[in-house]
Image (cartoon, rainbow, N blue to C red; front, side, top):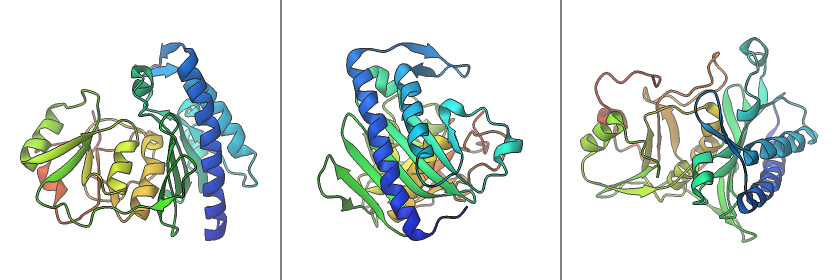
Length: 278
């Protein structure tokens, strides 16, 4: 089922509403206490992840648009089943669970609609900050704080004299990232959690975010639409746009988020870096 442009714009606003409903519940859990468990991949899971998943799944399934929902918290769907999907919702109910646990507010609800392997709408909502980023294919990328009037956002046309690098607050700087930064040379850094790093690139507050480590497809789907509609790119290290639901694993390759193409970002990679994180 391929939605037309008018339907995509309506679905974008509906998805934003669903994200805000989930965000409201996340904030309630955030303020009142929660349990933390560890998933099989050693990543943390909180009550907020599970409750947000339920709200989003119910909200999306209630829309007048019947397509499957693939969420981080319901990802055990066999590839034999999901590879038949032309269109589906791709959801991270709480992106940045570590930020949630650290209580720095830099976590998000991510909702994307994927059609034929590419995102056609994306919503990233940071509930504690009450900050929304959203986009639809051909409709531009937008940012809104609270109930204020949305403003259209764009990537930086040029990196200027010093590249601004978005990076995680977590100590994710392994040897590959260290070598990337060393080869890049003089640069400034801005730290942020979750999909908000990609949104910094989309709004022109950073030039590049290089993720040289493991992520999953629900971490990038919504942000990719926002970045692309802002004039930027999210690509693998072969400089090809990220694609979705193309194989059994839902792990992304290493990737770049960038606005300006004046840099050959690939040239800063350490030699011999594999395509997928190991």
